[in-house]
Length: 199
Length: 199
DNA sequence: AATTAGTATATAAAATGTTATATACCTGAT
DNA sequence: ATCAGGTATATAACATTTTATATACTAATT
Image (cartoon, rainbow over all chains, first blue to last red; front, top):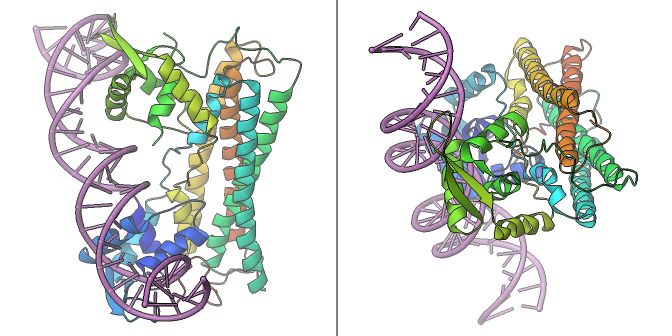
């Protein structure tokens, strides 16, 4: 998909596969993940294609590190990718599919699910807030006077926070609605939009 | 991943692989997609596992349809999946990764990208609004008096709308910030949070 | 001295997902 | 009549992702 392009973008500074993995976990977890068994062969392939160059570097803490650098062909490939415009794939939110099927559970099960969902996203949101707080503490220009590329990194962080805020708000609305006593009627007069498989 | 579970949830009513594909496209596009080359073998496998039963049905418009029904074991598997709580995977938003790398482009390229992004999500949002309008028109109880499972289908739709609204708002904030003349400084004093690969 | 934890790279096997292609049947348009 | 378009199923080939496993070196703990 776009892992090679993303690695290209991350290699603004030289880095090893292990470094890149750390970056995914620490700063990009809310919009991308990759594991080492994906990263290493991908870096290898990209070097063969001339997008990256690498050299070994002795490490104080373990075996030698293979440090990758973006070549000018790599930089051009990154620019080309960005110039093609945004790459929007359809999301795969299995938790939201689960919400669509919650009528299969009883009221208690539904509430339990929605509460668990809310907690999960509150946790995600707090992680991002932690990153923001840390950044803010060590950068006096944050957030009003960021230069590129920090400005764009901050944009991605802000989107994450906005998204989580929206989801948490939505969880509350769902919980409120499921708890509404008035129309606490079970299935029946349903026209069954949830399946979309009416014959 | 969870395609078998999702098919299980969708088979509240009997349906063919083709029907299920239509449902993905028409009603679940904003949170899941699957193609026929995935759906057919998966249904087959699930029947072998006893989660589904099927029978052929003559079709007026083409070759015979293989219609699948959820067995009681299938229903139980669905309940088990929902009882394990929300399945939240890390998102794969390559467009957001692209935003993080936008400092690679010049100002004009950045603005072009962000405008394209906003248009794209406005289009997505309008699609969902269309679905909502259609539903509202044919169901007099919409949206205040929905019974299950329509209630939960409506929850998923509302999340989509909230999410798109948040993203569009965020696009505007980004555009405004990139257009700000005051701090229109290029890279330089950056502490480079965007890469996270500082040595 | 042995274990545990962290850094670092790599491959094999399995599962998943995408793209391309093939078949077949029916309807409506050219 | 033929062709395009929609309905319907299926497989092959390819690409991607995940999980498991192996290796090797260092530092700190037990």
